[in-house]
Length: 413
Image (cartoon, rainbow, N blue to C red):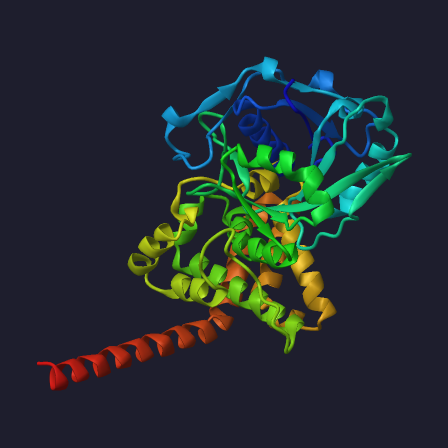
């Protein structure tokens, strides 16, 4: 019998982000298409006691598998509706693996729902994977205690967002290479139970990374997803940001400010943000690339696998237009709350200006042009520090090249 997988996700019934549903449908597709699992999609809402599974569409889920070109329609695959189902929470009692896709602050509600399920009626020993979206911190107990059952909980984080193609309607990750899922390093006790579920995740061809400190990766993901916030601000596509010197400068400033916050929080410690799940670059080098001329930066960004030059729109762009909540804006709010806690919010003027602009657009769409102008003024005022540092590093590289040329000329030629 195939393993039963339950995917719990927050619906957009309460004006929540579409990120959770998109991400869950994509996971459903890649899991069901392996042929190793039967998937149960379980939506939950804050205002509805039971998930409205009968109201959900029954059409086949289409998606682009990991590692393939997302804009090539020949790569689209579909999963037959017979291979997955929309169910209530009671279906979890027969599941071997439970995936929870939600904000970190929503988890208490999910735990309460899970405690009402009688897991003792079956011989299943489920494992729970928590995959938050739109969060910079995650902290879960090692086990969920339901009556006499002790269910292990494994913390994860997703280094990719999932969007729905506006033409083919296929679900696809915003990633050039195989999208990454970071799983907390397993203890010996949990590894004995969770090795099978982890093997199932690896069968999806997602890039599974096992790391000790997930918060370093969550901050790295948040830093890279600043581009989604700017996408919501200007309302176009990701490649328009790369083609705009102003928006590139704004993104560089936001990365610089967020990294400065993290350096302040770390103090003299060795804690630092990790970007490896998104791109093999440091925050400083990423900032310098964005400040470089476009003909220099674009080939390097493509080489390292950042899909920022693609003609696609992030979920935040759709959400702000439809009046939905956004995980990207939620991330920016959380970052500025952390900055306030460390009393460095005055050192993050661009992030603050972007958040104020987005709030005004959420209230009135007609204020978009004025909001962009206000952000532009702030970027023009504070971007000189990054530009001067970029020029300094270019001067150093030119000097180093000149010295190497002299050595080559004098001692070799």
